[in-house]
Image 1 (cartoon, rainbow, N blue to C red):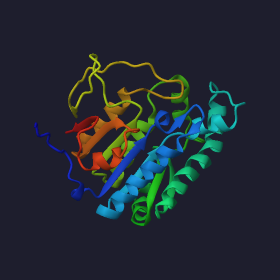
Image 2 (tube, rainbow, N blue to C red):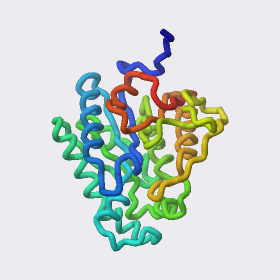
Image 3 (cartoon, helix red, strand yellow):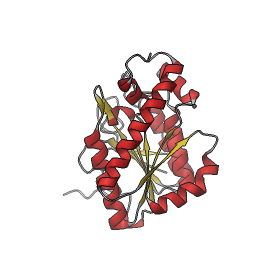
Image 4 (spheres, rainbow, N blue to C red):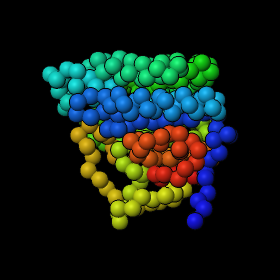
Length: 257
């Protein structure tokens, strides 16, 4: 049996960020409530067993809004912002309900990239009380909406790693609809260093997604380079994925300095 080194020790983790992508948390019929529930269960278990504090950076507001109001034009920036206005309450209420099921409080914070430092102290205090659900403030953050319209790199990828840096997260978990970072030979790249240039298979971007895998790789390389801590991209639909990654199980693609 080949021993594979575990890159993190769950007993040393204090804070983590779990980013859940839009295509992971939603389908053509709406939010994946089962996935949200299972993520909440794992995060609560980590808090109860190891006292790990978690920020969940959850996409899905805009797509939820489109599903709630079919008249909204997906190619119009204003309508996308309106979709976020109606979709965000549905998204956050689903998370709050899921955490309440397991006896955990969940709060919400909406970010723009120019107000992260001011949010640090209240965010750290909130994490002492419960789990925080974060998202870009899509209703007013039109740069993120324009990225969505143009199918280019999402500011949420950088915004979420910036939040991880601000709170001093020991581990950043990016849950996607892919098994990790895929090379041109269709194999998962197991490890990427912060200064490494990697060849990545270019996959078609989905209708609702932004930017594909490239900005996620760049943002995680920046996170590991700046902090020296660990990041990972993995398939969010694998059972117990958050729990296993926090325990250092080598699934997906890991990022190290």
